[in-house]
Length: 333
Image 1: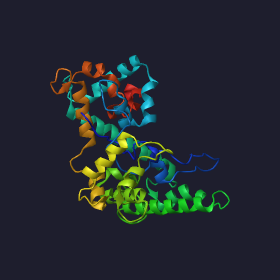
Image 2: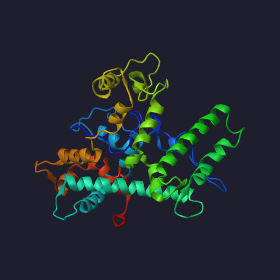
Image 3: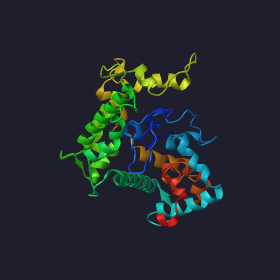
Image 4: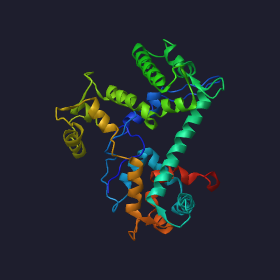
């Protein structure tokens, strides 16, 4: 059973999610990363791992699909015994009606809770960084000064090409900030700042996500995405390297499922359908996947024993916030 990724994934090899800058802490101020370099592009991709999805062999596909290669290493922080013990405590929290069974709806609720907590904690952290006057909101001046003044202010620090890159990033961040700022006062409330940082969480930001996606993939600037642009966003071949099978498969996916009107390219409507499919709920699919893979007696619900028997799948899934919840104390839930 294949399932989608609840988190936002920019490409198969995750290149676009790698930060290009390092946060530098100085004696009096903090160097901040532009939104694009900090978050990566906001869109999902159906193919989630280079590994075959075969849970009878291993869970590498699931781990990389849910975590990315680096985050999946969190799984190795604890011994199996410690992981099982802490996972058991998490199961008690997932079982909201205390009937000793965990259903798909309870796992779905838990995944959404964990995801919501991640977003909330991230916004809290960014507010502490950018809200210089401590009024609970972030103005565009506060954000841009903190993020871009050091990048654009020193000619000798960056060459002309680098400064132009950051100038364009600032323009793009300002456009997203203004779109998130519903009342247009250039001061983002906590909710508006959340929409700026996590636009995938807000319906009114979806059009902005589509625009940014096109800008990132459309290399020739014609406003549409052809198959070569689509592939190059995921895969850069080495010299004389034969094209991998997964790339050939992805080309066929483009032809069969992305290019709906069969004109050889994706227009804005088709890109919207790709990154915002109406009938595709990542959290719901993952909850059903976890039930399907762990429900040994096929009664459509899980006992704690069934979950612990399949603990390595759960600690690598969103049910435990990519493994992070296994390192939290029980009293933190």
